[in-house]
Image 1: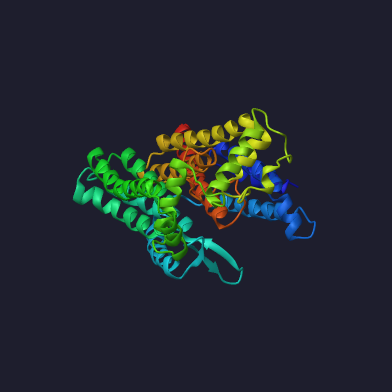
Image 2: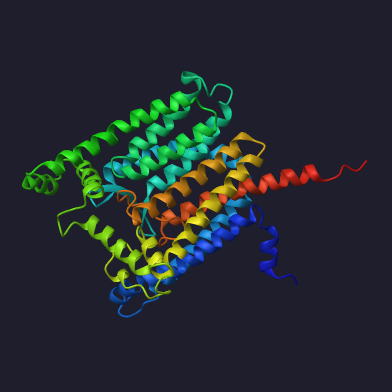
Length: 407
């Protein structure tokens, strides 16, 4: 009788290196999440420090299953459902914006019935957008250099999605837009059209920077505090504050964002080159979101700069393998789909790590496959499963070509 695990492995196809990277990142996730949540679990669950570890194991098991079953589906199926998924994501984003669960002055989540979990609808929207974008670009390759016939119809869904995400989550909207523009550049869109789009997108960013400069130079701190407390500018006030904190630091001792950044710096300084060892982090007791947005700081503290560099290396290898799939895929849809999804995951990872080491303003994005599980973790696994589906079909196509023809 054949081992069921052997049967499962025999049906597993796609890029073996990507499979190995997924396993590596999930193992890192288990170690980092267990270390980062030990004290929190002890406090919330009366001494049971393994609660969050078991939850993370459950998410990883579900995530691996999602990757496995998604990679078995022929990637052309995703082209068929792309338009439906995109059209469903738009009203979901609008609903989230006006009626979603509000946290930190922003509405990013909707509460799922029955299972009582919150879902960040931007994760679904990103996946749907890249499927739809890959579909549009593959169909408009002949006219992609034409602004009205090619670039504008492809750019319109990107603009709609980013505008709906931006009010509650500007950082995600900017990263998503950057990923899409990179895909358009590789998809042979005119550089002039892309630069015009970047110029338009830079207008609100420059406004935020100038507002931060003006506010920092203003002596009327009471007016600033009043604006914060009254919510006069909504999320705009939060964005300006983040840019100001990044540029100048903060004089306020109780500033939550600067507190996070400073605690992350302490963790990195304590880690040194080789780290303090697994489970020996002390900053985890003081750093908010140590298991989520700032988990990279805990990794560096426990495993040092060598461990942090290894995580960067894993994501860069992942991106390289996806670019390799893009080059080998004979069909435009599969090539654009694999590349687009890999861009958004790699850029999100680099943005998260850049925030942790204070190279970028605080964004609130997670570290893919490493931060503590949730619906974002599942959607990341689905994206990787789709990439592996493209890789599996590329291997199948190349295998058929290599088979000798028998007369």
